[in-house]
Length: 229
Image (cartoon, rainbow, N blue to C red; front, side, top):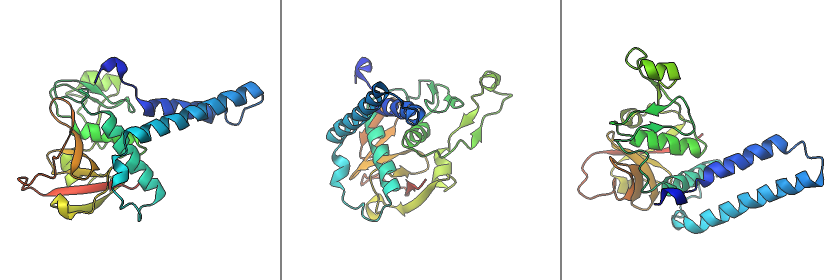
């Protein structure tokens, strides 16, 4: 993906929402009303275009028992995960500042699949928190910058120690009734299920979409979680 052509639609919509929330009750002129109407039209157009780009979620029908809020967050997680495929910001050899939490910064040389999941969930309206804190003695610079927090590790996910998510099932993924937007982990790696037998996750070099978690030769136990916030 060409870096210059990349647009984060989620950030655009959030900025529009921020403007609307600050002006929505202060409209006094026709000009202000026209601005608000135009911003709402932009939001609608973005949603329409995203729906055209990411239609695979609609091919999985079993959403009937989900609450509306849960469905929306699952849908947003799929869109946000897919939007970052091929991007290299979560590569092992790249340092990463979490976009929506200034207190989370991960050095190069560290795998970032759990950070990717944390950031996508945060962008989708689910804050699972940052339960891990680096030693300020070992990291004095990050301490001075207020960047010692870390999201849940893959081990913590696998052990069920992450808040605001429910365990959907464990074992072989083919036997689990998952939905697009659910989180899948084997305790060593983690990502999002985005459609039938497809996941999006951060590997050593980039964000990839493949059949990890659904391969016949994978013998380990997998667990699938769903955001419930």
